[in-house]
Amino acid sequence: MATTATTYSVPDLVRDLRAIVAKTTDNREIIRQVMPLARRISDDPSLRRDAFYECDEGQGMGINILHVEPDNTLLVEAIAWMPGRGVKPHDHQTWGVVVGLDGHETNVNWRRLDDRSRPGYAELEVQHEVVVEQGDVVAFLPDDIHSVRNDGGTTTLSLHIYGKSLASIDRSEFDPEAKVQRPCPKRVRRQV
Image (cartoon, rainbow, N blue to C red; front, side):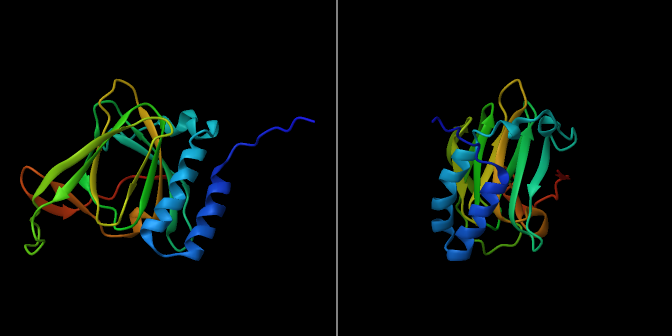
């Protein structure tokens, strides 16, 4: 008798995330275990629904919260990036895993060169870039700095998984040319 494979879904992912963080607090180990789950969920066609491609023109992206724990941990959100738009370098202050769902988005990883002794000052250089497509996974530690841009002509979509709700923590945004570090803007998010 043939069996039908079921799609790995957001509730399945949340169940597995809870089990992982219950066993370890080591960020690198959490990322190691979450990356294959992110790759697996990228096959779920329900993550590519039309509403997830809707963007806020002012911020150049659309953010749909698919799950957040009541204590603001374990955030899962779908982010759409408008063509020609993106975000400046920023940190997350939590671990993060991103998987491409549709299109091509460029993630730029930055290296911080200064000693962090001057408030509001940061000297950065590009470390490397990676183009993320459907099923490609990138991961971040709390102090990693990255930026995102959509160089294509259509809206892209990716799934973001974090150890904490980004709206609940103070993060930094960076201007590499001006060598400035400032609070990261709070983004408009929709609860799905």
